[in-house]
Length: 126
Ligand code: HEM
Image (cartoon, rainbow, N blue to C red):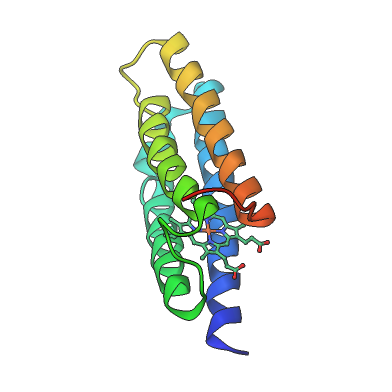
């Protein structure tokens, strides 16, 4: 298998895992099980997100895709920042429920947009 295919599969697997792990932690908080913070679920998402990003950056070296040249990729990077910030608020135990729910919805909408951009790769200005 080529380096490209290995990186792409790694990136995609980590992408599906990031959403699954985020949703799982939201769900556990929602059903009153905040104890996941004392389990490996505390660090596994961070390890997965590191793999996601390393694979993403490596893909830039083996594909013609370039941020600030291809608009879908530029948009993905900005949405990624939004997903991280909203995700942090959504999982902060000390914050109010309405703020956390709003942040969770924002994070999920942004990660859905990232998936859409990644799959459709629409052509628009950088
Ligand atoms: C939460 C963050 C991210 C998610 C969920 C995500 C998801 C995906 C998915 C599902 C694909 C495969 C689309 C397909 O062809 O079917 C993909 C492709 C790609 N991603 Fe990401 N991605 C993320 C972040 C990034 C970042 C930060 C970069 C670059 C800095 C990046 C670079 C790429 C590139 C270059 C491809 C195209 C590979 C190709 O089709 O040749 N991704 N991404």
